[in-house]
Image 1: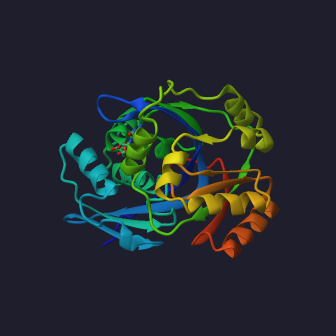
Image 2: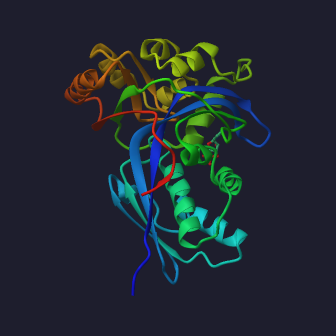
Image 3: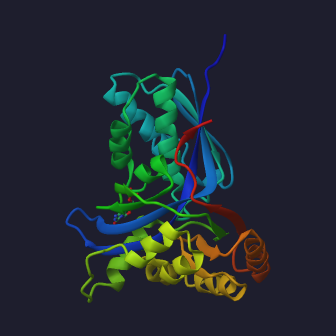
Length: 300
Ligand code: C5P
């Protein structure tokens, strides 16, 4: 018997701008979220099974749920329900994206599972249907599907693709443990309780820097409104940001809701130097170097 196996590779992301508005009545926050996919990938392999089963290997897999609360399982269930079939599939996740790190690892696995199940079950879902299911699964999941660079409005799920005029080099410092995204947004609400939070807007200078592929200009415009909240919950991240900047990074910021920190550097050689200095500083658990943009969910 031949066993069909479908493998999908999905990138991590960094938010080069994360502008956060006030909390909405539904508890979510309106965003102007400039996503950039980076070349760290999870892989999701779907094979036939007589039940829905999840297994995982790789970095920190002991910290991801292997039951139906895993976003990849929910992706399979939503697709199956729409097409009136049983969600019977074995999903094997090979993790390389830091877990609970603010790099959309869980969202990547959900997008990967969706594309893999669609191929395995021949459900033939349109791109729009896949994007709709992604948005139902989570605010960052549609971007994991499309990759590249995009502006996310609404809670981040309404995407407009962006042009990127060149490659950008990054170093990521992985912190001990994760940070809960809802907890970071709650801390944002607490920190901004007495202020008038402006409507979130993408910065024209940042979009121009992306389009020009100009790392120096991008460095001057990187901004994450969740950074004060992430630093408030994890004060030790300030030392990591400082260590990377001192080692020659063009700019440093918390990736999404953290606790992974991101360092934009001028080239691959600088990435190596900054990575070594970050490790030597003892302010992070591991470092990764990579570049961007990266393609979205892709069958391999
Ligand atoms: O959409 P997702 O499930 O990834 O969101 C996780 C949590 O992050 C939400 O429950 C909410 O607390 C917070 N969030 C938010 N505003 C957004 C996106 C996420 O408040 N735009």
